[in-house]
Length: 389
Image (cartoon, rainbow, N blue to C red; front, side, top):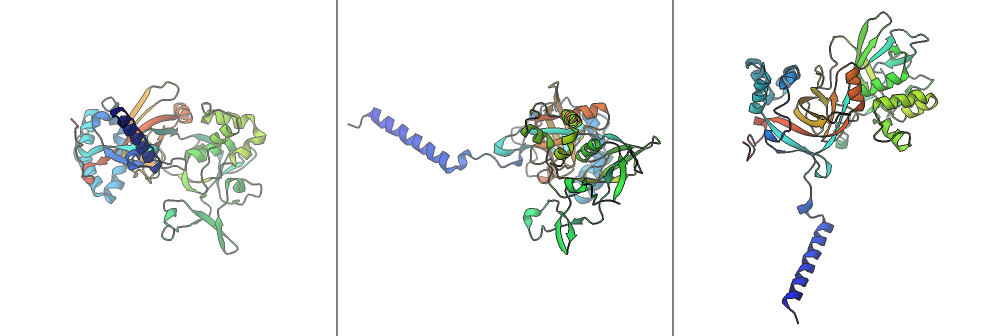
């Protein structure tokens, strides 16, 4: 007899079967939003927005205006307003940002809004314009035989990829890797820019992308990123974790440097696990190095991002914490640089400047955080998200 009870049991079985089928079929009902810049949100959803001394970010905004105003109509209007309005306080700049921009969520993989926030800084090395027994490790300028290979029109998957090569027997082959460049055969002999006294310090300079070198005379010269050999960046910290030498919690610039110092017989082999190699040029001007946007980086207000997701020059709101203390670190920054290890939507590398504090923070920074993109209002259909005060 088909009673009300058996009817209910049968209905529950049908519902369970339907739910199971939906899960197996990958029904769009359960599909997370696509990674990248997502929907608009309200200013009051940006934790710490009212507390950040925003006026500290004004130099970063001003520095990029000459470039962006020439290429983007929205930015031309914004930068004209920057020039004409009296932005002398945090309150002034906050009102300005809210007038001209709209905050947007940035979504990571699997619909997550949290990602990795790291840091970098500008180190100072000891070096010389000529080699001797003390200064015997070279920093190379961009090699004259390195080719920039642009095949994006034929192979779209190579768009935004750095493809570098050299000619060998009338064939274009990949450019030398780190292990090949630092080989005793010195294939780049004659391409030296200057020499430093510490190969480990030079290795970390490659990761930071720019720095300063103090010469025996006391003079300090700047060295800036000129190019890269086209090989992928491999984090040797992860290699040390995989080898059981360090735990994930222990890894930092400082602990990696200490490991290299304590294991000189294994140091070169470890560094060669990262085939990426950076070439430098001498920096003429004083002050901060320039990022990929070709504007001076502002300490703690400039970040490196994945330009495939976030356009260079985009104002961002970073919500994370400081290493060690766990204190909130929430601030307005600008996407003014890129990096070989900076990939994905919710990913940023904070430029901390120079000095011992910058080195410590950059070395230890590996925090979870969220990022919001502040997009010009006129570039978007939504100028005031629904439900915002």
